[in-house]
Length: 92
Image (cartoon, rainbow, N blue to C red; front, top):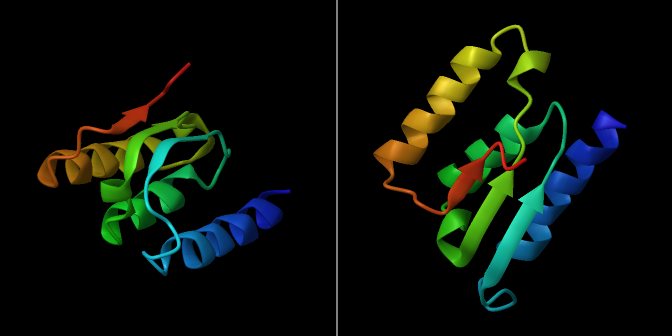
């Protein structure tokens, strides 16, 4: 199942965001994808997709990773460094 989610996230990035003429603006992106959320969020930040989304909400599952605390700290640091205010973690 996790492999299928990885495939969908890669397709989501490429197809939905590669051409800015196809995607004007997304109001809400909500996802709960155990074991791949850090990769997806890091890609959203690195490729600046967050700039075209009003709200991004994600439940993170740091407890599923041996280095989950570090992954969360790194993600929060990237959010702060980029002055991102529309990514909301642990939405439940």
